[in-house]
Amino acid sequence: MIFLLMLACSAPGFAQPEAEKPARILFLLDASSSMLGDWNAPENRFHAASRLISSIVDSIHKVNPDVAFAVRAFGSQYPAQDKNCYDTRLEVPFGLNNEGQIKTRLRYLVPRGYSPIAWSLKETAENDFIESNAYAYSIILITDGGESCGGDICATVASLLAKKISFKPYILSLVDYEPLREQYACLGKYLIVAKEKDIVPAINTIINDNRKILTIRTSGLKQTNVVANAPKGAPVRRSVPVITHTAPEPVKPVAATPVPEEEPVRAPEPAVTRPAPVTINRIYQRTKPSRQGLLFTLPGEERMVKVPPLKMTIRIEEDGPVPPRAVVPVARTGTATRPAPAAAKPPAAAKKPVKPAGNDIQSVPRKEEQLEYVVKTEDAKESTLQIYFTNGQGKNYLTEPRMVIRDSKTGKEVRNVYRNVTNGEPDPIKLEPGTYDISMPGSGSKANGVLIEAGKNKKYYMRVGSGSLSFFYPTAPDRPVKEFQARVSKRFKNGPVVNQNCDEELPYDPDNYHVEITTMPPMMLNMDLEFNVNKRIPIKEQGTVQITNKTSVGKIQFWYQMGDQTYVPFYEMMISGRVDMQKLSLQPGNYQVRYYKGPVDPLSKAELKLFSIKSNVTTKLELEL
Image 1 (cartoon, one colour):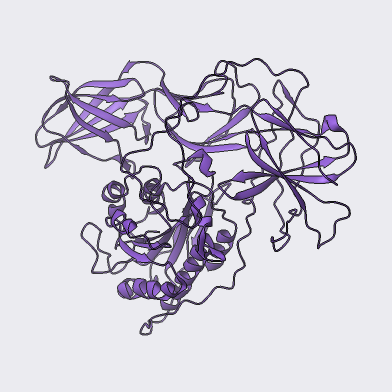
Image 2: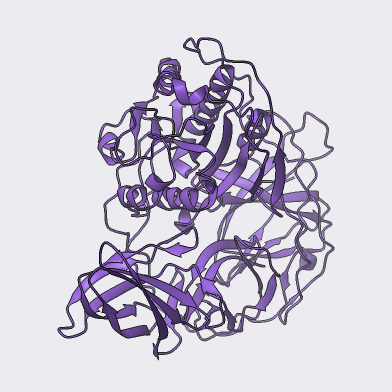
């Protein structure tokens, strides 16, 4: 994570901390699939990172218990195969005395995805560091590699993060890979923590560099309400009490104390109770929703763990032939490279990666439109442009599309930039005086005749239309997606959840949305929806698994692959010997089925059978007894 604690010796570009501001430190934790690789065998990198966070928190709290901590992770929600470059989430909000909450949350995180570091920094700046007038913010990035989504870390630091932090961040690298030092040079102080002996020096460096900041107390400051999103579900509001402390004693370097935590159990995250699935056309229910009890464990899995109930429903395709489908060849323009367990991630190229055609979200302009606008002019030191997107009725949108600015006379491209919004206000764009035409690639929206004057800031309020969401099968684009329903909600705002049938297109305001699709297992994604754009979300056609045992087996568990090595339980089924009832429609991918032979006792170990699901294919399994 990017530590924000560098004191009076902060590098230029970071705001200097004011004396009365107490410190707040956010850990930005790498939870990508490569973190399952060995650190110092048999300990993996993610477990080492969790221990490192606990040691830093304990050591700093011995200096000053009024320092507040938070944890944001990236790569923990989606498997690496999804190549999700928006996978980041605030796992633990800022709070005092929350060491126990941090340790508990870290035990239930599972590394599985990509490393969208630049996007995570942007989310930190815009959503986590929201009270920079009252607190001195800092970040510590803990990682084993570099950016894997083509994001520009340096540009993000310069345009967003540098405005919010009070002292230089720290990067704690769990691998000794020198090229990473140059990649993070613009971010902060780079420390290698590749061995156990590196932990204490790294913690002492952080504390000694920032001794003055870390001794600022909250005594006498006003009470503050901290609001942040819980890992899943409704936001949690916490009241931070005013605490009075005596003056701190002289600080000595603090040695890290080993945290006696057990190896994290790769169990699913606590599940959120979801609305009951809707029966649609070819899908119907033959069994009641099941509940997870104890995990079916294997040799090497140390303990039985309670799993929160997962309220899902088995979905079984009706007997009969699968509807004909038009198979469309998919042009693969790029493939993902799985990181080797013991190797560090190479630094990413500056350019954004090319995504595979057909398997990613498509942006389709709804129509060509010439934007209407109202202009306000104010004096300024430079000639600048601020663009506001509005519905024309007083509501402004925070969406940040890419904009191409061209000279109206010559048609020459002058700027190609993203619209950035900070605290609700669009960042000014510097332009030479003149007349320009502005287009938003992918949306079909244009604004012509934008006039820039010397020594003036021109505020253009452009009226825009809504965007829309729809769904398609990449392998059968002409077949309506009637089997599923999507639950759509605004990610950062309170509001209703829209239940959208996946065979229809519905309009939505431009914003960031959380979309959950009732596939098995459920598909979940976060996405930005721009104005005048139809976002088409691909869904893979399901296949079927059938258990062919004609005698009773009892309860079995299905586990699906998340990341390169991790499997997570998601569903249970009773096998009674009725073959026609022992079917389950699943998304394509790799799975396990676990079951017990004979009577079950606390020392029993489960049997395991691996299988794969392909679209429109029935996979038959006979469980050996």
